[in-house]
Image (cartoon, rainbow over all chains, first blue to last red; front, side, top):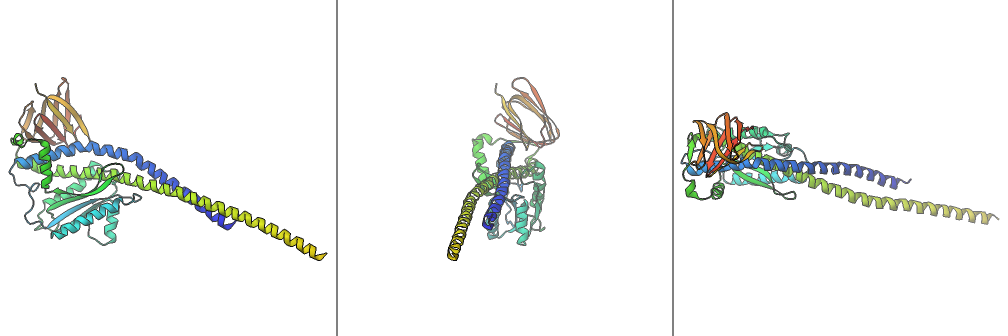
Length: 308
Length: 85
């Protein structure tokens, strides 16, 4: 067997092995998307009810509370960026990081200092490599987050939010979150949301969804509006962070499935063209051998004819 | 008679959903019972049991480690941190 042919065969073997791996990853991700999607669906009633409750208090009490009132002179903002732990998911993590950069430069434009809170090894490595400051980071659960994970992250954010930004360098006045919204199997969108203080538009939407304003006007708080807000704030952040994590996990699986599907398709293409090249090399080898034999026989015949 | 639409949800899933005639829960101020046409209310739950008397006569108890109860126009939502039937 000729050298050229051997090289082609070796490359085909390696591409086939890679194809098996990418194919397996594609199937694994495909099966996990469904589960991740179900978890998003299962967690949304809680998240929605809580958002309704928060906007109810916000709209029906005059209590001044950090949950609903923006700081008059905000100094710092926290940005939570949710990415994947592992790669092989196309542009998934990078898209979220870029969205984060956009938000951070917007906040800086408003004169705020920005603390970065990161979830997922991809974001952590990205920030470390560029020597950017990280306020806090978590990793190891991006593809299957539990409520405990969300609680741990939220606790840090809430502590920072409730710390006065004027006196303490760790305190922040605003909480933002960057996650990848799972719209469908084929569309995932990195989005930035303001968690705290409550964005006005969100209040407004919830109000409209709740119906007639006048009927809502009477509201009883057990024990007091302020007590309820104090208890609501951490739960609200937890629920939003948890929901964002679950959506990101579903998006991660979807992105990985798509990336692995195109990798498998590309491997097929490669194998096809390598097969053609290998066939051509084999035929060239045969042709060469025939012409060598014919040429050799010719030479032999003319040599023996000349000697007579 | 009007009935209450009750939802009991935990962060991870919906635990209960259905029509009920009465809901009782323990809030910071003490036990409260919710009947149809209750005033809009938002309360903080303390660890205890939430009882839902369903429209078909059955009663379900949920162990709560804390959470919220929200009542608005005959819609009762109970948000538990860890709601268990």
